[in-house]
Amino acid sequence: MGTPNYNSEYLEAVKTQVEINETLQVQIEEDRNTVTYHSRVNDKSDGKLIIAWPTHAGMRLLAHRDQILAFSFVRDSIPHLFSGMIDDMNPEGLPQLTIIQSSAITRIQRRQNYRIKCMIPVEVTGIVRDTRNDVDVPLNFRTTTSDLSAGGLAIRLPKPIPENSLLEIKLVLPDDGEVIRIPCQVAYSDSPVENQMMYRTGLRFLAISEAERARIVRYGYRIQLKGLHP
Image 1 (tube, rainbow, N blue to C red):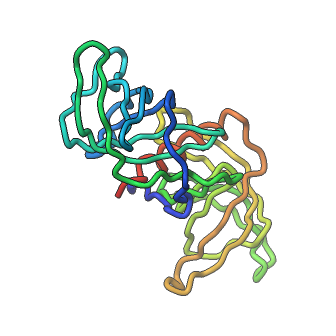
Image 2 (tube, one colour; image 1 turned 45 degrees about the vertical axis):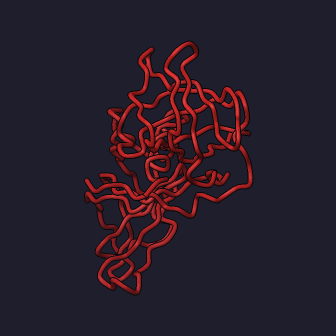
């Protein structure tokens, strides 16, 4: 499986500020695979943030001065993200960190479906019409997605599939959940200029449960957060 890539078009810089009492999620900038710590903005002073020492399950973040941390918070149901450097630490009494913001605040744009660049295993089956020979041809192959959203996905195939063809996919998300089976309709199938041998094919989900859609959305959200900081 390939490593999912973050698509930066879903971020935009915003003119906003982190407010006192804002709830923060915190990760170590150098290793975004670490656990997520939780914190809150206690105060602001000279442009710096004074935050509660980030904790996870009662355990404090192992912090040091000049360490860069990745922060996220939610405002109006939209995730906002930024990075900051630890300028000072106060482990006594009310444990706090003083943070100098080191990047602009960005937010994930509010769209109906986020399209995430990723390579996820998928199996495609169905019956398609061979218009040249006027016969129905069974289709059964395995490939990977080139992008994914809550409303559909795109794959690359060695031959075109007629638009509006009805297919079924089995999608394997890397979240330890069951395989997702979804009936789909071909939205388009075209050959990119840079690769005349492969056809980029878009599939539109026809029926998907709320639980399955939620799994896709959560996966896409995690990928976007991981890809925020290059």
